[in-house]
Image (cartoon, rainbow, N blue to C red; front, top):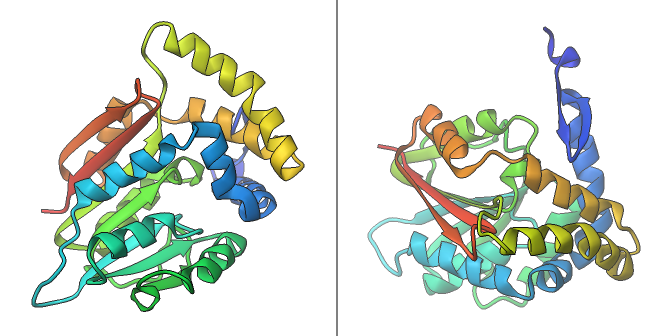
Length: 254
């Protein structure tokens, strides 16, 4: 089967594999200006705690004899990049990369007022085919972005390629809630509240309908951990947050 004949999920829709990236791009183009505001509203601000936990797990150094370089993929608005640089007290060098130019524009504009703006660079790139040399980064982070990549395994292979030996990958992503009672409430909230909220704040419910559906199509923690192993990562582990609403995955290039 040729790639033009392959299909994948775009939320609940079945679409041609080659068409998914364009559909995802449109979603993020439409919500770029209010993306972070919607994250706050949808999660009640809890996404900030999950992201803080991700950066705490990374524990970027505050000093050293050589640069500490991080690639934050799908990092558009820069909230992870800013956290990493601030936690390292300006020692870490972060490349915030995203395939969506609108998300990068929002992030670059915000970065002008950051505490360490010179330590962050914004670069347009496709996670499936990174424009960086092999063994370039000490860490690779991606928060709530990997499920939007059409060829997830290819993106993980690329993450492994650009990491230095001894480098670490951290992936923060939504999961399927597995707590009785909370599962039913979360499903109702996702279906009945999030899309209308998106329409109220951004003028369009469709992108948030896609976000809800894309979460349900993402591999469960065991399956995604297996994908990290397949990409070559070792000592893979995962930690679930808030009743498994979100999961943090980590692995090492050894």
